[in-house]
Length: 365
Image (cartoon, rainbow, N blue to C red; front, side, top):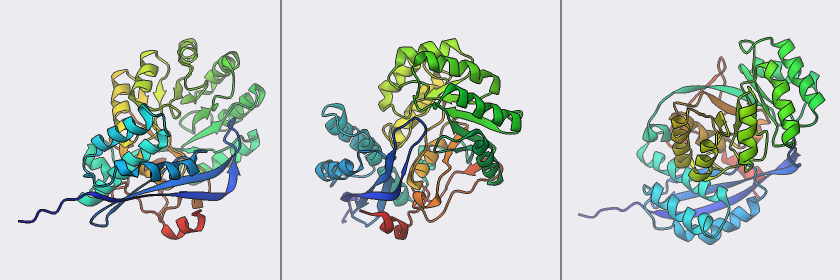
C-alpha cells in the first residue's frame, strides 16, 4: 500500500504597499504596507497569513526567502515543532523579526484547518461563537470629530469605540468629556482610550487620574511596553484599568508583565506576539493571573481572521478590536459584519476568511 505523505512544498512571501500614509496617535507617520505569507502543501492547499504594518515588510520578504528551508518538506501538522524551530533559529538565538515567527504559525494553522476542512477555533477548542466588538479609530481627532465618528460607528452597529490620546492633556480631557457628555454611561457607549506610549510617566499618571471620571473600559499603552516598573507603579496608583501588550513577544515577556502586575488587560496579537498558538498560551497564563486577554487587532483582514480564531477559544476575552479604516486595506472578499455590537467568529475552514486576490494584485509590489 502506498502512503501519501503531506509535506510543505512551497513558501512564498510578498510585499503589499498601499497608496497612503498614516499616523496612529503619537506614533510616527508611516507608509501602510503588509507582508502576505503563503505556505502550500504538496496537494496544492495553501495557508496564508499577513503582517501588521511593520516598517520591516521589505525585510520580511527577504527574511522568508532566506529561512524557508526550515519549513520545506516538513509535515504541516507539526505546527508547534515547526514554530519552535523557526523561533529558535531566527528569533531567540539570532534575533530576527518577531512577525516572521507569528506569520509562520498563523499560516500553518490556516493550512491545517483547510486540510481537515475545519475552522482553526474548532481545532483549538471553541469557547464562544461571537464576541463584542469596538471601533478602533486610527488617528487623533478633534473633540467634535470624535462625536461624528462615534455616531458613524453606532450607525454601523458598534456599541463601543476606542479613541487615541496623547497629543496634550487638555485635548485628551476635552475628547473624553465630550464623549461622555454625549453618551452619559457605558450603556450608551463603551469607551476605550489608547495613548500609544505618548507621554512620560508623570504626565501619564495625570492622564490616568483625570480619565477615571469618564468610566473607561481601559487605558491602553500608557507607557513603553518594556517599562515594567513604570507600568506596575502606574497600575497600582490609579483606578482606571490599564491595558497593553501589542508590542511584546513570547510567553516569557508576558509572564514577566503579569508577574509584576503591569496590566488589567493583556493585548497580544497573533501576528506580532508569536502566533495563534502563543496567544492561546498567553490567554491561559493571563486567566491564571485574573487578567483579561483581549488581543490587539489592526491591519488587513488576515490579521482580523487569525486573531478572531484564537479569540473564539479564550474564556477571558470579551472584545474584538475592529479597525475603523477603509475597506480596501482588508484585502478580503467579505467584510466582517457588525450586528448589535457583536461579530460572529468565521466558521469556514482555516482562518475562516478568504483573500480577494484581485485586490491583492492591485497593491502587490
